[in-house]
Image (cartoon, rainbow, N blue to C red; front, top):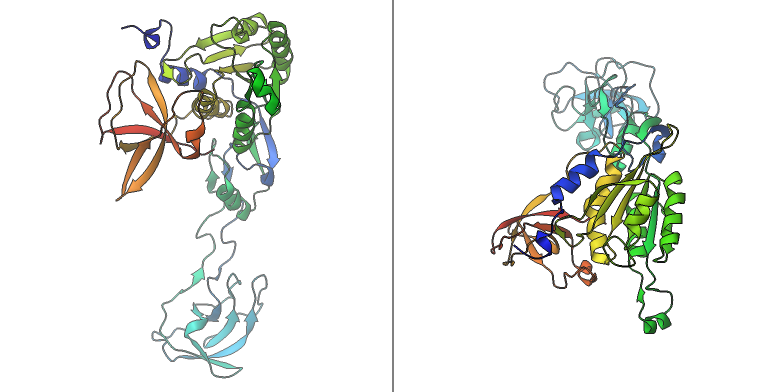
Length: 412
């Protein structure tokens, strides 16, 4: 077989992902206030120091009752004040007594039922009557029925999203141990970036990679500065020499192929980086470069360089697949990407390389279906206005309409 897909030295997508998942050294941990941990990964399991609920309470606005009667419809009770949420009653309920109570209020000693206010008839300031029968222990939230002291709330590696943060907060958790987030430097290489519309007349183009990466990292939860440097070996070398001391990850765009002005790989080697792999049998993004710098002294920290091609679609795909995998691996996340299966609605010609195609996924009659989008070349981005997933198409296989393929939803 001939063509770039058969080029020697290319590794598979799965091999590249495996190396990025397993090669990085996990970052240190830190203890932070819970409110600062959104989108962070837990470094230690969290256990509850309290019961939830911490006391038995009313599940509704209504009346706490004390009765041994088997049939409660039309039963009457003497009314003894009220309990608001956040307050308590020191007086236990006696047989035939009731007290007004609100949702979340601590039920007094002696309570056997809580009657929601919709079924209670207030006959006077001192008496109520039930319009319906209710079962024993109705509408009572009992101590520890959701969480008990010592119960595990969250495990190592769990991502703290807004729901997890709220659940931990409700359990009174104040601080948690999380993995440090990677310090990332983003370097856009090239002399072709236009700074003004007039620059377009000089053969330059507007920058998409800088804004793309800035937005991608913001969505991931990191605020990064974008550095622009020219395609000059001395600039690239100096940049790597400085950044490897300060950052855990360097992301570059452009300069990773075999052109006369592609200086990322040689300058990486000159500044102490060791190649993990270069070139993946995929489309777009074949000349993907992954390298590692290990300091000679024990006080330093490793730095990982992920060199992306310069074409913006290749940058976008590589960040969704490999960039996220690398950042997650540094925070002890080595689980595989979450691929879904869906039905392709049309045929696709074969290609010598595996492809990541931008597609639109939608449900039709309960089935998840995929529609490919036009303008898939690596220098084109306009179809990202409609794309909501990346679909992995195997090499050397013609895909027929109606066939199942694997996809990855785009979240940013």
